Image 1 (spheres, rainbow, N blue to C red):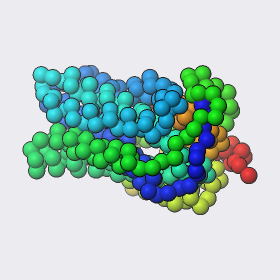
Image 2 (cartoon, helix red, strand yellow):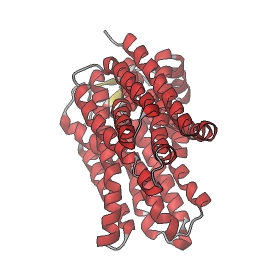
Image 3 (cartoon, rainbow, N blue to C red):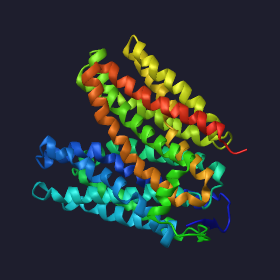
Length: 392
């Protein structure tokens, strides 16, 4: 479906409920914290517990394209509201779970995955209804900042509900209540509706976008962006343990530096991309990012290592938003198709994890960094390509 928007302004009244939608999007990131609670409660083996994350992420592959089709049929706002409704159901299910009903957790996490996939595919497209296309990267970065706040607050909320209220599962109705408020807020907010002026969004129209070299390059960029993100999370503790001989518990705290840098970068990106073209920033950010990543190999101390990680995260954190924002800016009338393709590419990033494992087994800690360098190198080349093909 080719869409036209009745008005193209950027009213913050319409933007605010969408930004809080990014907070709901952050619920997918609670899986690591929640697994630490579910595993002993339900006496799960490592193998069974390992399937819990897949209950969320498998849906990125299965329903991202159907979400683009749904946006074309019923509109982006209604599609986002459906995602919030699914998430609300998911957030109230775990209260019914017990050691005898572990399947409830699997159902709940599946619903979180379904709701999150629909939200990630539909929400950026909905933002394009009120945000000028050249400002979309800035707004997506701001949304990523809000999403990061959710990820940072979740361990705190789990601790508070477990200690003060003696039931960690009260985290879920708390997040369910937040989702209800966001859904009501979005429902009553006037957002210009995209109107059909061409063919309806379909599976064919989504995959046809891959024939556009620019969109294909940006979609692959999402794969490497997610791959680098996952890779740093895996690599940091392993590198600390294997190279600097840091004990396991301290090494496990290492990714905190990375996530703090990502949060700062998201907020900074929202301000910078509002003033400077993301296409211009892209190659410079990735260039500094690849230098910082390479410097890890020569970092003499853990402190130097963390400085390198911080700078690398600061520079690469907005690559996801830049890929999606620049792609939509290039072909704004195909926002449904583009966001659907790019959300599906998130699953592709998961292939980096086994590659990291292979590289570590073959070349030890150095192999991990080399894989990360490969991811950032693609993003650097993509940044150069984006800058060369930016709008006049």
